[in-house]
Length: 298
Image (cartoon, rainbow, N blue to C red; front, side):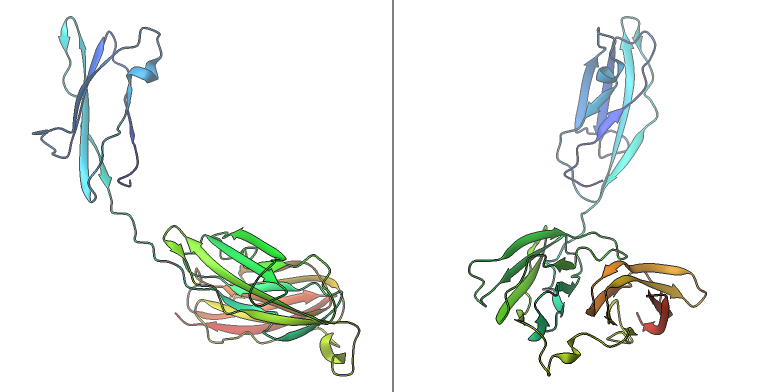
């Protein structure tokens, strides 16, 4: 247990007891005690109130504590109970998380009016929350989005490293976004600021902004440790499933299982709990199956 916890010491009732004597010590012989108190048996019959004690003392880290109880009444006192113990451990040191790395849309990318950008970044080790800013100026004045996302703590869930812009975006405007990570130790610096331009219609240069075919691209980086980005392209809106398997065909993660709009997309694989080795990732879309391999090296 941690030094700031308040353990509840509990024991069963002794027949005919009118009082209990409780001792708590950091010495197994009880040569000195932190607690030596007497509790009267409750006349209300509430057994828990007289057979438990909440310890509110301060504890020393990396120390064993011992406790015992004996029952008393007018006839005398019982022998001491069996001695129980608990250990107070030093809490893990928590570092401030690194700034997140933004992934998608790529910096200075162009998207069309009507597309729904899915802002995506790579998770920061130890982060418990992410702060996201989205604005129409690089100074982030008059924020369009100012929100906090709670880190899921589950490597198979990426809902805490993506944010979908639901509002309609204005054509011929540039939008800016950034993310920072936080935990109990503090907050990271802001990530690099990314921007993208929203354009109306499709010009000759933009003709390729909507892919012509379904494509599952090679992950990058590869080999990787422990996170990598998997890009994929959809020529039309459809339901997409992307899963990761080991070389024996056992499912490791489901990265995507949802309706996705036409366009270029990315998803992040966090393989923190995987073992080193080769894995297969597979995309199912529009009754088509696409498969590639990736390599994790720890």
